[in-house]
Amino acid sequence: MNNKVTIIMYHYVRDLENSRYPGIKGLDTSLFKGQVNYLLRHYNFVSVEQLIDANENKTALPPKSCLLTFDDAYIDHFTNVFPVLNQHKIQGAFFPPIKAVTEHTVLDVNKIHFILAAVEDKKQVITEIFKQLSLLRKEHGLLPDETYYTKLGIASRYDSADVMFIKNLLQYELETGIRNQIIDHLFVHFLQVDEKSFSQELYMSEGQIKYMLDNGMHIGSHGLNHYWLGKLTKEQQRTEIEASVEFLKRIGVDENYLSICYPFGSYNSDTLELLPEYGFKAGFTTEVDIAELTEEKMFTLARLDTNDLPKEENASVNSWFLKG
Ligand SMILES: [Zn+2]
Image (cartoon, rainbow, N blue to C red):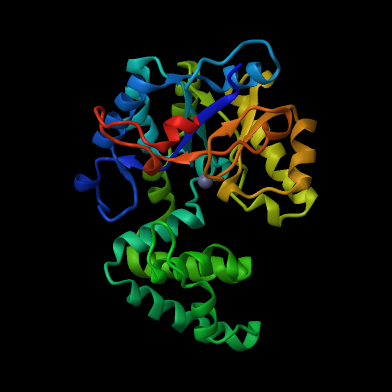
């Protein structure tokens, strides 16, 4: 019996060229449609509920099963993704960070994306960061600029060394208070926008999320503050999980099918202990692979990135097709 699922992860899906920040790293809506058509030709779409039922041996999964997941509740998902999924009767799984949606804040990680998208020359951002570090260095015992750059400025699959330095330094290296202070400074300095109105333009509202749920989409937890769960104490994690469950119940999510997508893919043994306690049945990570539905792996489901698969309807299958 098939227990493999190709789970695909999406973030921004928008008409990039005509958007306010064309430099944002996102998937163009036309390519999203192309990828859905490609998947329709070669895969069988399944829902989160089907995954959970399959794990509990209630139903079998079709061969070449495929599930689409969307992180962070961007407005893109409501305007650009939902109509496409609805048209083809495909279920998408959406994971809203609660505070951003209900209190109209902007996630640090999104502030960083838009700072990077707004500033062509990344050296300007780095210069501004170094200025801030020099102001804070003595009081907080910060390391020399070059030490941070050497440690963190390492190019990744998708980003240059400069971009990775900025992301790594501001996403986790510095302690939270200092990170927030620098990110907020850069956000105001380079974007000159008000956080609340920016948030309302960037994320779906609670009403829009509920509308998608009522129309067959799956809504899961993505924490309250979008923290790295694996770096929190068990009690802090409990707060994150509890608040998200409360939100999910409020909008009417079926409590028998709770799922979580770990912010930044981060979790630890405390997380895995807490989730079943709150009735969760599945957890999505950022490990790049085909997911396997086994008892041990239901809370550490791997996902592919949209960039791992073809985005044209008529493209031939790639190596992930054979593995899935
Ligand atoms: Zn996220």
